[in-house]
Length: 119
Length: 205
Image (cartoon, rainbow over all chains, first blue to last red; front, side):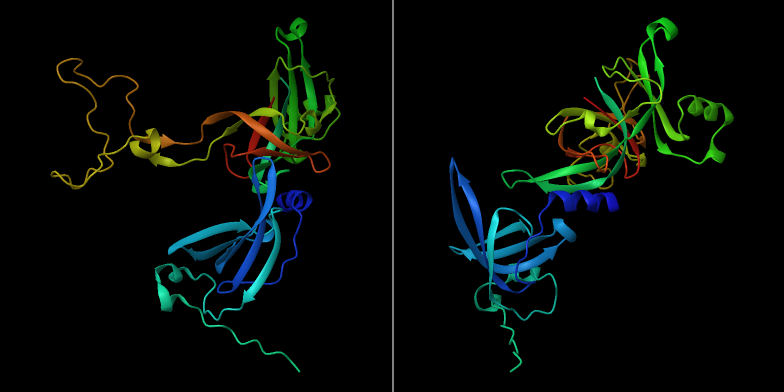
């Protein structure tokens, strides 16, 4: 196990993103390659889960595009991701919100968490 | 052919230069000690005998202790011979994982995980019966007919049936060495290799 971690630490660069968890709405900016050209794309959606531990952790993000649900799984430390913006903190009761897949329209909304700032 | 003995550490994934996620098996390869060099003149064949893995002296037979003493090393857990390798080593030399380079193709030999007594669907990839209709009710994973009737009036030899699966010697060819970490004696091999974590494998190129 220690050897596994040692190998990961040498070969994977840890990225520092803002903290996000299931229920949050975030925008992921990532590089894609078309032939020889490289450009940036973004994916805005709700986090369904964060999975795995350490440097190989991944997250699943879901959005409704043209009436069709689209999900993508990104490794948290993927070098293709350039930026992550947290748009909204969601108020959810569990760490994996797969029930969202079965919900349509109004019921698929997630209540926003009120962030109390100390003044 | 250049070979080394290793120990399977586990699986992980790393990113390549393009940012793609590559699944890898981490193998602790070496350092191995050359305990004997077999030559055509002396033994009738040429081979290199390598030893790997630490072992307590009290658990080692006297005969093996003497053998290790000749190579000027401590007792080792596994001793294997590799025939007709193109590696120039003498008795007592250390073989390290730096015989491999990033991007080399290799083959890995290991002992597969034991699965116990298994039916034909899992053991020989039979497709099973399929549906539950047409009068079927409890034979979805049955092997079916074992052969014809009056000829041969017996079951042919080698008929694939249920039995013990796993714990076989398995060789996987054409695996790529993604990364070599010489300081920790680690090899990262793309994809899966046979055996459970902690099992001994040989990596050759």
